[in-house]
Structure formats: C-alpha cells, structure tokens
Image (cartoon, rainbow, N blue to C red):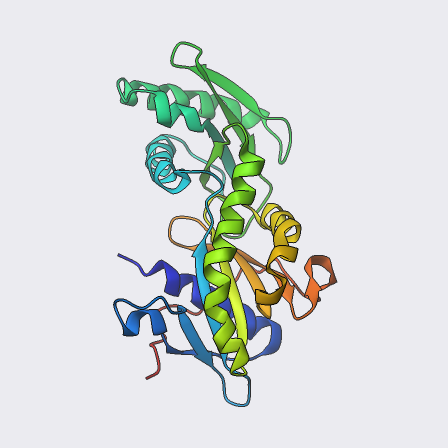
Length: 279
C-alpha cells in the first residue's frame, strides 16, 4: 500500500524545487517516531534554507465522501474498460452520491454495460467544457451525466469519476475544512515558534467537488477564526488514483491566492519515494 502522505509531501517538494530551485529532503517524520504521537507529519531541510514543518490532511466535502469515492472509482474503472477515450482529452462521469447510499448492487454488470454503450455513443457529440449529456438509470431514479474536459497533462485519455454532490454541500464543506484547520494548525505552532517555516498541505482527491478554487474560497471565509494559528504557507494538491495531478499555492507569507506570484497550477511531480528519509 502506498504512503499517501509521503506522495503528497513529495509533490510539495517538487513545487518548491520548481518555484525556487530549492531541493528539500525529508529529515524526519515526527508522527511516525512514536506510535502514540499527535505530532506533525514531516520536517524537511535544504542547505542554506529555513527548515520546513509540514502537516498534511485530506479534505472531505461531505460525510463519507472518501469511502463512497472508492466505490465510485471501482465502478467507473469497470466502465472505462469498455470504452476508448482519445488521448488528447478526458471525460468526466458524474454520478449522484445517493446512488451509492441508497441503490442496491443488483444488475451491476448490466448497468455498467448500459452506461459504457451510452458513453461510446455520446462522446463524438461533446465538446471540451461544453454542455453535458445525461442518461437516466435504475428506473429513472438517478441521472448520470457525462461531460468532456479540455486537455490536462495528467488526465488525458481517462474517464474521471466525479460525484454529484448531496444537498447542503456548501455548509458541509465549510464545516469539514474548518474542522481540518482546527485539528491540524495547532500542531504547527511550536515549530513556527522555533524558527521553522510552517506548511499546511491540503489534499483533495475529487477534482470536481474539492478543487483548489472551492477550497480557497472556504479557507478565506474561515481564516479569521484561525488568525493566530495560521501557517506560513498553505498548499493544495489534487490526487487521482494515488497520484498527484496538480497543485496550487493558497497562502504564502501574508499573501493569499491571486496575490501570490507563480502560485500554480503545477503539473510536474518528479520526486517520489525513491528519495529516502534522511536520518
């Protein structure tokens, strides 16, 4: 099983290398040093540069999103095996959350074949970022939508699973991100006091529900509540099938969002877990 925290941290290292030419290595993993530790995830170092303390957290937009997402990804992967997507673009398949919460798994193979045939028929009629098309399934109870993306270096040639959000998503998302900030930011404070740069690394895996723009908007809404605990930097990474596909800088020093120079998106992540932890 891959170490998702280390994958995300290596993406951050790649961003720092691209932006400033600074090659940071992972010196320590404080939370791994003691099985009962509630410490931060990483301490990174680079000769001649301030050391960096990193805390990583995954963002859920609603209760149970991650577990439903795993089921969703498996379902879409089975559909993808029956279709041929051009290598110059990608497609997004949007399925209601309630389909996984309420629907039985009977007739799964038949449903997958029906959706795959519909996608093969529909793809030639779609345009990048244009109008989506839909099919009603399970007796018309659920509508599944298909849309074409543009071109993305890490997504082209793929069918991307995305979930149609449940009702009251906005309040649920704000609550989730606020909860993540409440639990993670205090861990970084002692490291900032000791002269390190502190980074909060926010990872989302659903490119349709938890993208950088949405996360940025929610963080900006709640930041005043955490003014005293704010880290030096906040970085958002989006993962897809245990791979980071893009990254953005949300906060750097006193600057936020569009005021940050060269804030992203970043698509190249060449550092991996072959770079061993330095002890």
